[in-house]
Length: 252
Image (cartoon, rainbow, N blue to C red; front, top):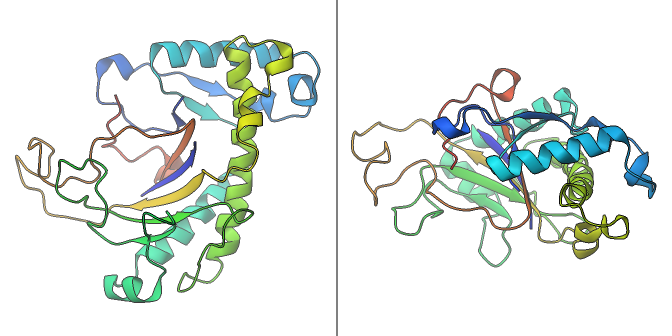
């Protein structure tokens, strides 16, 4: 399973990168930006914040991806978010389709059934399910049919991810060497986070077919089709021991 928080720079916890050039993606300790000091309170950046901004600049210039630690989301909160998703997706498909609010392109919220999405429109539908949540301050998410505690758990996770994203925006501005008066440049352009989404992606077991589901065919269904994320930030969390054990994610 993948938990995908996107705000309209790719950022995440990724277990394996497909190309040798991606093998040395750095891990960045983001904690200097998670405390209220330096440029987070309108003062000059601290030494630690400048160091992190430099690391972000190098990682984005060389790779376009990076691992991040200390985003302000506790391990227990990540586990709880995945447990909530597991409780939702492990139900029978017919129960989910009838009980949950179904996703539509107009709302970009709700449950996406298996093969209900085309990340790459040139392929057959994707072999995954999903559930999409948007900001409760901007939209009325329909949580009908979700497991007990699902709304509360995802709301807690949303708030932590949004806080991290707002601070990462400032870190990116510093990495781009914007003047001190413009370190809130990205934050000013996205005050409401109404284009952000929290998306659960669930990949149920499926048959392996050589030349087809392995991605060799350019038109057959795979787990999720080739695509580029829109927007500014993507935080990607993986399910497994320490959330880094899933081994087939391909990034380029």
